[in-house]
Length: 90
Image (cartoon, rainbow, N blue to C red; front, side):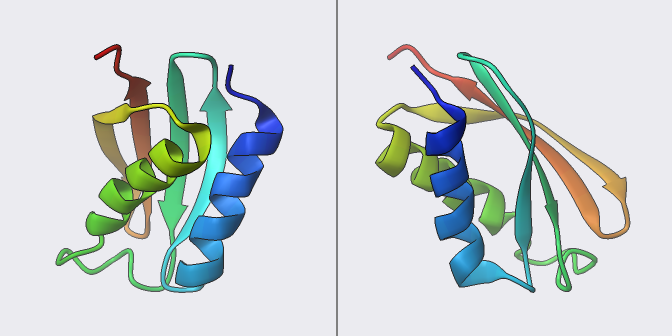
């Protein structure tokens, strides 16, 4: 079961190493899906910012002990992205 406390831990660990270049904020979660808003000082650069989305997936796997895949990426502003992670059942 995914708890808000566990997701807070994922966000804290991720942001501790990446802020202010990249910051992750929880937008929505249920037991099968998590939506994260990514922003930061490097978000407007096209090159390499998306690597943060993949890195976040590994934080989810390490801390929640569940495997997620990126199911949707949407640029909502020049410096903001919404990324949807879906639980995989493999």
